[in-house]
Each structure stands twice: as structure tokens, then as C-alpha cells.
Length: 367
Ligand SMILES: *Cc1c(COP(=O)(O)O)cnc(C)c1O
Image (cartoon, rainbow, N blue to C red; front, side, top):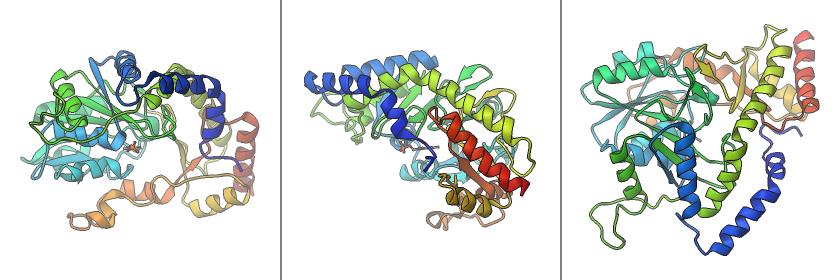
């Protein structure tokens, strides 16, 4: 079976280093929020060019704690994409606010800035653009709208560590940004983790407080917080991966290049479009076809794993049936949910395996 995301191969490529780092942590006696977490926070903020970074339990918590730290709560509205992983909207609901969806751009699959302003009301507090599949949203336009209407911008950068917009890394473009270290993310650990990057030092202080039960002085509490901390083992693993991430992202681009070269011969599959201002790190390589079912069956029959990201838009989820949306509201997102499917993508996808995937697809297209 050719894996969609080959995590095992990835692990074996760094196994010795990671086992050594884990042993060091185990022998250190410090296991939750310690020197490795501090080092990771410093290295990530330095790399992305923000003044601070705060590591937390996972990417969803990164979003929840950021919204909470900004005081966003019941009665507030937050604008985001209906075509993303559920957590982007779940975090908004989790703090009591209401997600307001805006359709996406048919080329980048990211929130369409031209459609944002019509959704802004007096209750709107923030915009969460998602850098979907590893490509930045149109941040200049989004920041312009946010500035005009005095809104906070929180980047959901969970799928895009290392991607850039006009040469600047995602994670340093909004007021704050959230990353996930879930194993399948391009900067992933061997468990759960997440981080918020920001240059707003007041916000950073508030998030640090929230992640440890809302306190700055142990056993004295003046607010309600969370328990959302990163373990030293994960920080140590992530420091190893962080050293490789530029290389791994460039290997993803090599894989993507081979897909483009060979699959562009056919007009049957719609390939990802990279916007001029963006570098894409291909967290996922999703292609589109009106005959998705046929391709999914074909891949499965040939022992090639694929995936659907995402089969149901967020405005059509049962949990949001109380919100004023119906099928047809976001035609671009709805169409993508019916046509896109992901091809195997990883820094460790061999040329041989990739050529096999390509041949299977081309044989079908040519008949
Ligand atoms: C993975 C992901 C999240 C959530 O991250 P977790 O670490 O799984 O909680 C949020 N938003 C997007 C776009 C994601 O891909």
C-alpha cells in the first residue's frame, strides 16, 4: 500500500536522533513545560520573525486560547472559511462566539477577501483565515479589511509551517497565528502539540497564563484558564524536526513538481494552483475531478491510499444546523467538497512509488 502520508518512513529517517533526545528528557526529570519547550518557543519565534511564541497542547487549543485571550465570547462573531478542518470553527464556538462563513477563492481554496466585507456586522470581532493545504490566504487584502473595520486577524496556519506570502513566513502576518504539531502536519511531533506565534506581548502573557489554569503564581488563581501545555518530550522531538523542516518542505515541493510535470498532460485532473504571492508547502496535494468516485476506486484498487479533504463544508454540518445557512450558500466550497481528493504526498515519497501513482492515473485518463 502506498501511504497518503508516510509517517513511518519519516520517523525512521530521524529515529536515532529522536531516541537520544527522548532519553535526555527522560533523564532530566522535567517533563512538562521546561527548557526544551522554552527553546522551541524561541527557535520558532526567531524563525518566523515574531516577538514571541507560546506552546500549548494542540492546534485547536492554540485557536481557543487565542480567541479567549482576546476576550472573544458570546455575542461576538468571527469570520472564517467553510472549507477547512472543523477545528477552525469549533474554536470559535468553544469560546461562545458565532462562526460566520465566507466562501473561498476557486484557485487558492482560501477565504475570498472580496466576499468578507458584506459579512461584517457590529458584532464582528475577528477574522480567522486558514492557510489551507499549505498555501497562504490573501493576507494583504485580509489585513486591509481588518484594519478598516478594527478586527483582529488570527491565522490558522496549522497546515502551513514554512509557507510564505510575499516572502514573509505565515505565522507572522496576522495579529497572532496558530500551528498544530499533530503527526500528519508538516511540522509534526509523535503525539499532540501546538503553538501560537505573535508579536503582541500582552496577548502572549495572557495566553501563557491561560495555558496553566489562568494563573501566574502557583496555587493563587484570579481567573479561569485551561490545562494546555506542551510536554518536554514533544518539544525535544520538534526541535529535531525543526532542523529538518526546510529540507522536508523542499522535498515536498520536488514531489509536487513531478506531479505537475506528469499530470498536467491531462486536462482531466485539476491541479493545485500556486498564487503569484505565495510559496506552497503542500501539506496536502489535492487534485480535482468531477469523477472523483471513479478515481478513488481506481486508486484503492491499485493499493494507493487517498483522502477527501473535506467531504462536508462546515456550514452544512449537523452541529451548525441552527445557523442561518443552507446548501447553495457557498458554491465554490461546496463544489470543492465534491471534487477534490488528495494524492500521496510526503518528503519521503519515493520517485518509484510516485511514478506508479502517476501511471495509474494516466492510464485511466488515456483509457
Ligand atoms: C489540524 C488542524 C487544526 C487543529 O489542530 P489539532 O492539533 O489537531 O488540534 C486546526 N485547523 C486546521 C486547519 C488544521 O488542519
